[in-house]
Image 1 (cartoon, rainbow, N blue to C red):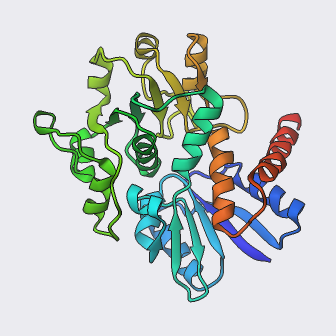
Image 2: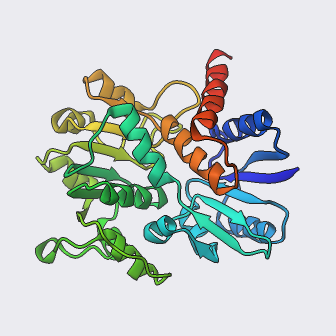
Length: 306
C-alpha cells in the first residue's frame, strides 16, 4: 500500500482524503491518503525528511505550507516555477522531490464552471498573499486578466516579496517573470502580461474601483464567521465572488453574504475537485478526467446524504 498525506494546519476540515480514497478504491489502486497536521514549519520539515526516506510516496499540501513545499523540491513543473508555490509533491525513485502546482489550473476550471467567468481583460482583487494567492495570480495572468490587486495586511511586504514596482513607476510587466527572477530558480518564459498591484484592506475598502471578480485565498471563514472584506464593500463593488475556502457543511460567510446580495458566488469545493484531478494525474493516475470527476462527485453526494 502506497502512503500519501494531505498536509496542512488546520486539516480536520479537509475533504481530500475522501476524494482521493474514493478514486483509489474504485480503480483498485493500492494507495491511501491520510490527513496530517504537522503543527508548524518544524513539523513540516520532519515530514519532508520522511518523504525523502520513502515512508510516503507523495504529499498534497495546503495552508500554510505551500511556500515551504516549493523550497523543499529538487525539481519543479513549469507552473510551480512560475508561482513559487507547490501543493503536490512526488517522491522520485532516487529520493528527489518533484513539485507541482494544481491550484492554478483548478481555480480556472472551477471559476469557469461555477460562475461562467470570462478572464480576458478582467479586473480582479485577490485577498491574501500566500501560496494559493500566487497560484491564482499566475492563473489570472495566463488567462488574460488586465488588472490584479493583491490585498494583504502588509502590502509593502507583499510588494517587496513579489517584486511589484511602486505605483508611480509601474509598467506593464509580467508577474510571472517577476516570480522567476525573485525566486532565482530555473528560468521560465514570460509571455502574458498584467498590471499587478499590492493594496491593504483599509485602502481597498476606501477604493471606489469596480472589480469583476473577488477571489479569497485567506483562511477567513473556514472555521469562523469572518470575511476578508465588509458587506458594505461587497455590495458596492458588486464583483463575482470565488472563495477558495470551503466547509464540510454549509458555505462560507463570504459566499453567503454575496448570494444574499444577489452576487454570483461559489466556494472552494469545485476548485478542490479540479485541482485534485490534476494532482492525481501528477501522481500517475491516467484515468479519464470525466471518469475521475464522476467518482468524486458520487463520493461528495454520499457525504451530503450522511
